[in-house]
Image (cartoon, rainbow, N blue to C red; front, side):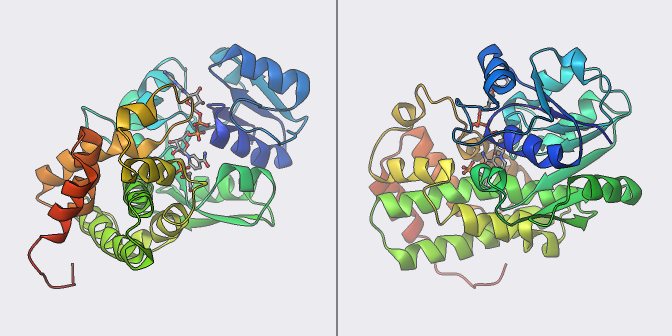
Length: 324
Ligand SMILES: NC(=O)c1ccc[n+]([C@@H]2O[C@H](COP(=O)([O-])OP(=O)(O)OC[C@H]3O[C@@H](n4cnc5c(N)ncnc54)[C@H](O)[C@@H]3O)[C@@H](O)[C@H]2O)c1
Ligand SMILES: O=P(O)(O)OC[C@H](O)CO
């Protein structure tokens, strides 16, 4: 199975490196200088510095060069998945969504966006605790690979698997997507706890209560609890809520220090998906009648509400039962 990768950021490049262990890979990238650097120097200095890429990866800015691939890993940022996919003749080839987020305006998960743009294409989701630089370095990593079509899922898993890259099969596509989208917002919240100096107890509480709200939202959208408690949900939540290697957590640290979201987001070339997901997740939760106080707090901070006021509002909420 020849693999195409759409998106030459850190994660697209790392996944191209994973797929290149099993054969040739065509990597579509948006920036000409990134394609040139990959083909000429076997590096992506803009988005994944310090990694020597496989000779089996060919980078291009011409989506037409994806024509001979059988499956496409979609790794553009969530807000750009629609425009990027609209420019590609996908047909009935499998689309493996690897971005984590919810589209603003439509409130669609990226898999739902893919189905809307290419209704003939089968959809899978690859998600989990996966810092790109660790995957590219060959460090042991496990992911959820969710797809309703079991034979296709097995073929994809066999094609991408390696001793240090273990896909775990699931048929809960929506659950895998919701975990990845929501954890980015919760990672911002954990960064705020760090930036505001609120302590380790508070961070653990945000992880646990954040997981409760991820689960409430997921169940309301038809996800299964076991998926949310797996690699793509709790696993990724723990990773990104614990490390400044997470762009979302780092953004939260800045917000917690009282810096403005606009200042923190200005001129950045890398994506912190939680900043785009938080407002749309807040809307989706309200629409579904799901209480998501941590998400609401992150949304308020991104809107410019002072950090002390946001924390006071969270802590002043009425006492409640711990269950969902
Ligand atoms: N980096 C990771 O460790 C990691 C791991 C798992 C999942 N992801 C997810 O993968 C997705 C891509 O993230 P990344 O880390 O590879 O990106 P990145 O931050 O490394 O790079 C930014 C990407 O955005 C693209 N981009 C910018 N403007 C664009 C536009 N107008 N249209 C289309 N593309 C545009 C750039 O070409 C580049 O590919 C995100 O949803 C992210 O949450 C990232
Ligand atoms: O750097 P972040 O916060 O975008 O996290 C990257 C991945 O999603 C971790 O699994």
